Length: 205
Image 1 (tube, rainbow, N blue to C red):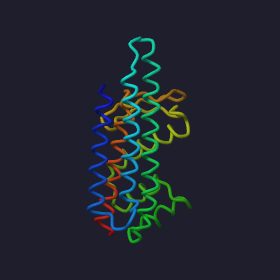
Image 2 (cartoon, rainbow, N blue to C red; image 1 turned 45 degrees about the vertical axis):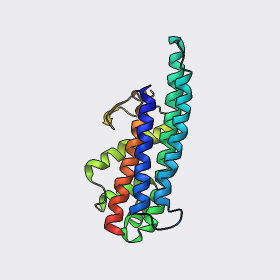
Image 3 (tube, rainbow, N blue to C red; image 1 turned 60 degrees about the vertical axis):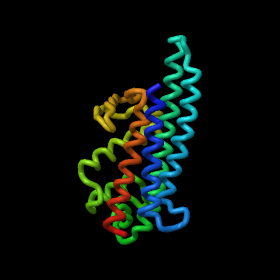
Image 4 (cartoon, rainbow, N blue to C red; image 1 turned 60 degrees about the horizontal axis):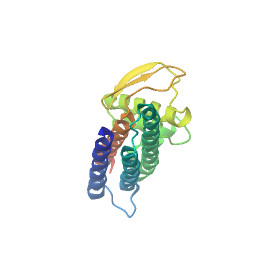
């Protein structure tokens, strides 16, 4: 089952990021910057265990395959949503830690509350996020918001590639992508957040 290999690779990747943040960035007990990655690591581990159970009980009957695939998409989608939620919380904590970065103040010019989207937009305006990376953030957050608020039913027409996955959106229809879509998107979310954190740390610490 290729999904299991994908989740195993994601688990290893998140662990590497967590360990690098622990070693190079974190400077306090229960540091939210590294705890974010460890929380995501634990969530990915739970997903791995569920998918392993599904793999062991995968139906031989082709008629049951569609139902099993739907469960897989639900489980991996929930992992992706949880991962981005962890990233949003950690980004809010981080802009408080890096008080000299200007990101918090710039973000609050747009909205009286901090959100991941406004934090990343402010970071781009201040030079912490490259323009080409901003497009990936935008697409990622569109998918997250649709998954959270709209059951992955699109409210727009759009086709794009993210994390090597072709995403197709049509108004009123569920987003289309291969079965490993949310595994790849989780990996991309974690990588984007690490790069953002590293850039802010190097420039504003």
